[in-house]
Length: 321
Image (cartoon, rainbow, N blue to C red):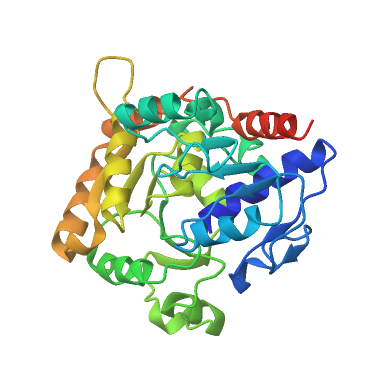
């Protein structure tokens, strides 16, 4: 879903520049998500092909595409790409290792876009001006685990939070493609599961919650960069070793400039290594450390300007000029 969010944002930008845009995907849940752009199941006949997926069949897909087209190929977030694979390599984030990006820049002879200037966010995010932290430092805490949450992470956090003693709303936001228990409870309006003195609330994901939060607890991904734009302190878990390394790398690049050494992102490692006691203890400590949360907010100010999607769109349009 995170890949789809940034692809849809990019689609809107190139469409605004006069291009015809279509999607191809093998994930049925994404078909309504990319509306109003058309979505087809087969390889397209196009002038430029943009690939943003982690699926294992990408090499076979590209071989098939190359056999019938000479159109430029743009790869997004593919660090294993070979210089002959495509015309442009884009990393719309800031969590690659310096050694890797240096090697890629050399291999691709400058055909690499990477860093804060190319962070791709949806226009809806950029239109929301960050709220001063003093106006939201007392709540709520927002929990999210991605658009589909296939392993039930949000449900686990919801169960663990039953013992949290934090005097603010705890919002558990299920994603659009989630079919988990929390989504089912919400659809059934099963309010008996929420006691009168229970401050846990189940809600559909909405970016406004990230915008208004005192703290976000989630999984590493596109939401991480949206929280940075909103200047919202973030505690992030990882599902994979790759994500854990990326989250740590990003945290090291979000350090404040006032000498306090505070990062706006705190990486908590693999979620599977977490226990209820540790989870609740860390959240309680983080909530009570209001000054620390204020510093986390301050550390994300002016990291990037929000125009990365437009910059990427401009470069892609030049390929077809």
